[in-house]
View 1 (cartoon, rainbow, N blue to C red):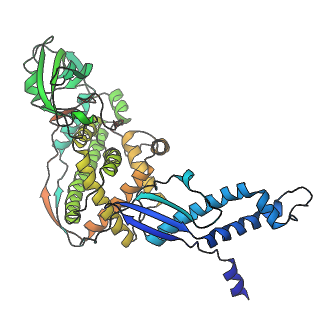
View 2 (tube, rainbow, N blue to C red; view 1 turned 180 degrees about the vertical axis):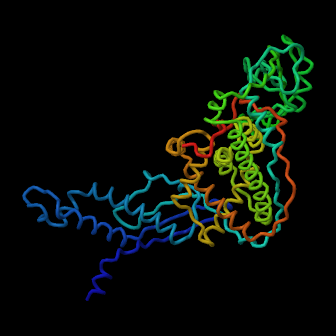
View 3 (cartoon, rainbow, N blue to C red; view 1 turned 135 degrees about the vertical axis):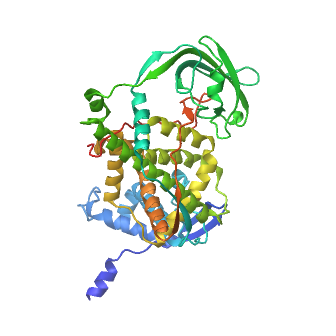
Length: 483
């Protein structure tokens, strides 16, 4: 008796007819038909739920005839049944067809009609994870960069940090590498039309100038010819990933008008400066914090190089193409993921800006590689039961907060406000899966040198607009126990 009762209480599974058409590697066109008998079943259940509370003239609550209740509340019932059938049908499509969607279905809900006779039909397009054979991921041969953080590394990093707090003093003559110049920039096309301009930009002189959509090699040599009041021009190539389609790959002229030259004077390490840098009690505390930050950055470079090799191995056979629209939509997410990872690892604003500007130059190709890698890692994670937990999020947010000087609560609120929690989730799952892959890899250690900054990155685009411009967060040196 109890077994029969349990069986009666179990909800019935919605029966649907589904036709899935593969329109591209990641695109599916889905046609769904809900049989009439299922619509009638949902109708009877809805009327049954309504009966106890239905108020009709001449009848006490719950006493009105079933047919009369259905007729009186037909419009409300139809809307309710249509909505429930649609939601349940979409859920059944995922369960029945194993589509592994990567976006919401492109469905015009208002166009779906609940007919008086016959089946309810609707169709939609949806982006799904491509189907592929799992690559061999165990026993990969990987080179791992290794380095002991030396006192010299710490002193160099400290000098770079203190230089940011240095005093700018007027400098005579032409600018040299390391000087700060104040300049007006103007970008024009081949017909001398102005594409963009910027007034009184502060730029540190380095061998390369990195803009959001172009790079200028030999920047230091170019401005070395100038004295204040003079202008020099150079030709630059606009990135194929620039925000303005018709300017991609075109040449432009960048005019640099030098207004002023300043030189940095290193500050004296005082108790007030130590407090300002991170509430340090002594210069030794500052050096120890810098050493830990360098260790974090070394680990980021290790992860990056190891991940590049893992990605190359895993995606070697991934010859499938990805839809351009998907790549364009995901390219901003790739930039956001990169910024989160850099923040977590303690890179300063200039380093983040340089990296983001470089990434913007080839973001579509980079996104294609990252997406293929993501799909493969996601499939490995599913097969190996790799998952995220509340603790994972707490640790990630705490690490970002420790580097940014903000509280974990404010970091979480910022991520939620910008809709980046799913980016953080992907980062957690991918890192844990990479750790799983590398735990079964064969390593060969190789020497590593920290890259020297040879480019000055500025927030300006030749086209005047940077695709998906990002807020580059402040990342001061912070103590390990920063709240």
